[in-house]
Length: 378
Length: 255
Ligand SMILES: Nc1ncnc2c1ncn2[C@@H]1O[C@H](COP(=O)(O)OP(=O)(O)OP(=O)(O)O)[C@@H](O)[C@H]1O
Ligand SMILES: [Mg+2]
Image (cartoon, rainbow over the protein chains, first blue to last red):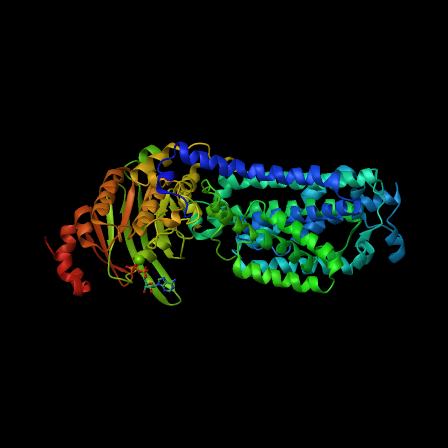
């Protein structure tokens, strides 16, 4: 804030307005740049294999964008987003298993591990419209009920984090224990088509990637609008001084619930696109460790910055698969070391470097920057 | 119910008790807060002034009764009490430090806004917010984060938040403490201007400020009401002099 001069903010007239416009629409320009890279550059430059990987990172990034909203803006350390990622992923995977089994058929693993009959609750997932509906409605309903129960009881901070993490543990345990219904430890895999499109067709693969990248861009725009809306301001107020918000006539639980549900839906949609791209969804994609990986990207990128969570998640995804291929043992240590450095020296993530870079450039900083730096703990 | 109540809004408190694990911070208080007068609540440190306001605004649990427009405030949830038109400030000014002064006021103005409108960005500064910015003299700082404000300015912002809320009942907990003499006078004059159609309770240690602006005074001591009346009546009360032992001269002082 050092470069902001007193004259810059004297009235609500021309000057600050220009700065504000830059602050608001500058973000849109940044999203457009990301869109350009993901939607134009990547499909034309990367091998199908790398593109598929990038599609997976985008699906994690969708969950990360939601975490940015819930944690960065709402102060809720959501440590169990794997649950919602899994709800979407398994919903989509169930539909694809039923597609592969053909009309009237049942998924192969049910004959392998079970008695060859299908549980009744699988049946509706044969329908494509129902599947699409469930990808949004299931996480919305579950997160609403959970969030209502947790937030109305004013569970906060570390307790909230532990509780959500426990949910991810319970969810993965449940999946592993129900091998006849959910494929257990192996999860659901060997799909052939998604909504009638052959998953082995290079065009379909590219299409799936494009859907994944496009959804990520859409989520970024949604969160951008969330952040600049009055709701976004209220959410920050709630994060920083929950009790004070109460004395202005709002129920902070409701304010946080909106962000919690939105984050769950984003994670679910991410999971739903992950399953066809990866060709598998299993407990290891949705358990506590997977949930922590989602958080890790957000922390690295900067939880309350607009692009921080998404870029952080893509970077962590890239690091995990690419660098770990080359340095199988070194990567884990490198990653651990990186987090320690970031958390100690840049608690608001790499995005907090941006205002510092910007202040070195000519021109003025936007007032928005105040929301990005100077974070206090979760 | 609206028209007939104008000029006669009141909060009637009967047998209010606040018990902190056996320690009665408020002990059977009866008190009537009437619209249209600046009601000062004074008393030594630890008398229970803040706790009384806490109980009436849903921050702490109290037993007994506090009637406002046919509702018992005790047992109601804090945000519901605010929605009834009861606002307060805090002894330690609490504002949203990362948000701008304008955003702080805009959020306070939100009580009257529909939930669905929250999803849009603010296009213009709402009329009431602009007016309030002028009243509290923070126009120049409208777009600065509230965290950079000086202590007195934060208190002003809190008052501003009450004004945009358009609270019909206002509890001001030591709001003028930390303000300069000029600022106190401005605050006092502002309160005098807005009090006719409101119920305003001012907690204050500054006796000079009290003498100048109080229409009615309640003195609390050890969780109980010690004395009530006009400034003159309070100053003449020997009991009041006793609890203000060290500062007795101050209470009675006449210029
Ligand atoms: N949450 C609490 N738990 C236990 N005791 C409390 C609590 N809050 C206040 N008290 C006690 O209740 C008594 C009244 O406190 P209160 O803050 O209401 O006094 P006050 O009149 O506002 O004093 P001051 O002028 O110093 O602000 C004090 O003895 C205080 O220690
Ligand atoms: Mg007090």
